[in-house]
Length: 478
Ligand code: NDP
Image (cartoon, rainbow, N blue to C red; front, side):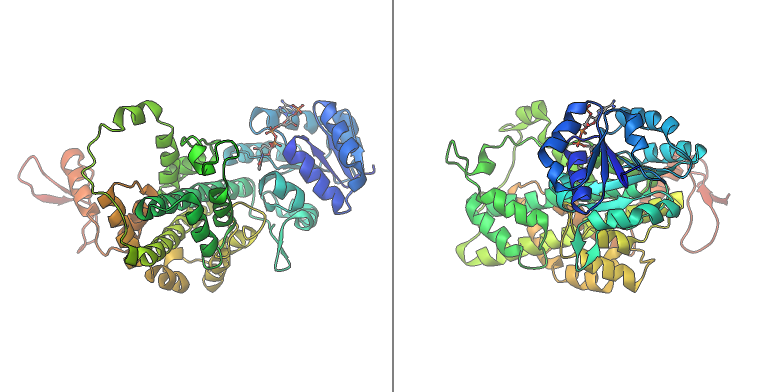
């Protein structure tokens, strides 16, 4: 046995992860179903470190030091099961199988339970950062047992992104916790992107500004509280000109957003757990709306708008830009706060004991949502690990509080001028809902009791009550 770790599945992600490991001095066994990929990896990058290529899965496993550490980086779903089934008879108790693909967390829970029966550790691991991250340092979110992390963690921490001398990798929790957190990461990514897109649209329509001018605004924003990878690349995209037409690149791209499905998983789980992740849901539905081609064709130019032409007056332009910035920041805090609530709820539901401050910490580098403000989230959970609402942390009440008036102005202006801002608006509605001392949910309960005898509780007495709506409307205690 000559390799410290192995990677099977050498498409773009696995290949780059293997190179990252080799560059960090690990001898890496490499394998792929079709051997051509293995060969090309060794031919093109063999000089970067020690690769031990294997043509068969048996040779691949035989090349590994014990306890064996096998990273599976194949297409999520059936292919992952196929590879695991092939590995099981070749492995021995104590060996560790790492699924670094984008598995759905219930699959990870199932696989972990199955491998445990064979005495094997299964580590479902979120990896974020795309191909560039895989090569140069991703954010890594491993689940699985503490024991497996003790053996595997140091290697993963070595190849992860590093921020302020700390690796963007930590043991998230048992079984599916790592893939769950990766799923929420992707959901938050959807929300963040949608919010940025809405800010762009407001600036474009309100100011009548060009894409290039807005690129400058985003570049400026990237020097402050909003500093993040997504803001940075937005500035770059908006500054880009299409080579063929000379038009702003963003204007030649078809306006139908696609998705691979992790946003949908996040929203489905939010519904399952009863956690209002409205920012992520609006972002996912906004993509769906953009792709609703027949509906859009039926509505465009047909549905009355009853709006006025919009042109922010010259003297108000800087103030408007600042309002949009504040509204973006506040909405973003809401989306993250909701995502962290979802993590807390799942942690409770599945007994994962996830440290949310650590999650924010390992998202600071390598991944798509890396941002300066994740430090503020880590600090908030350091102040109170059981914080019931991120928004209610003293830092965020101040930071969001500063922007509330601006946020209201922006959402009102958008409504008045017919600019769709579903994520801005629903984040503000969430903010007002969660801070309300009394909600009209009381009326919902009364209605439910009226038509379905679903009962209600009272503000002034304990117990469960029903009113005889169809009779004398007397109240009885249930
Ligand atoms: P793909 O998802 O395109 O998967 C291709 C790889 O899977 C190839 O190595 C292929 O082998 C292998 N494969 C497919 N079916 C089987 C099978 N039945 N048995 C054995 N091997 C099979 O590759 P990516 O590199 O893009 O992604 C790998 C994983 O990482 C996925 O789960 C993806 O969701 C996840 N991921 C991807 C990111 C990205 O930015 N691309 C970011 C983070 C995670 P062969 O060459 O023989 O066809």
